[in-house]
Length: 236
Image (tube, rainbow, N blue to C red; front, side, top):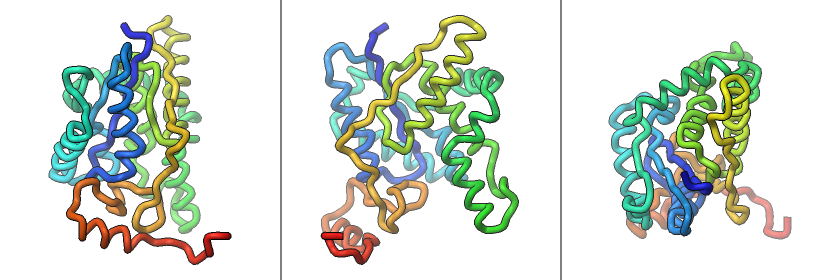
């Protein structure tokens, strides 16, 4: 096994956008061209189920993201390129890891805390509309990574916590059952910031606040012109 195994996935919850390109597609294609690198890239359709209940949207997104990766120069002859749901051992490993994962660790996950904070601000029950899938998301992500003993996982800054949690979960499993899993590290492109979307929030396929990668020039101009900005002068 290569000592430089890189793995990354893109959630198939909508049309791929500039944020995906800058944060995941471009760095992963670059990494795949490095000599001595063993690359695993996947279409995260199980993760998409947390964000959308529309099967047609997930299916269309899966094809669009696969096409984006290939159009951006990913060579399937050089990498392992796959759809998450085609590997039944991933949900199987997810359950095994669930049985060694502390609930307290999952309580601290950013996505879960953000959901409970929103509910608290609205005066609702802390877990209103929070699915077990959202709560368990970090365990599925840990299974994605640990399954292939990845050394590095290229991610945006907002995903670093999930890699740290995958390390914690892998460490716990190794402590109980022996050294089976490599403990992964997050690989962040320091020059890349989180791109804001059309409404000022983080650009996200799930919110449809994105600038798609492949649109006609006039539509692109219109989308960019509609981005929400603040009223501060450049000096501020």
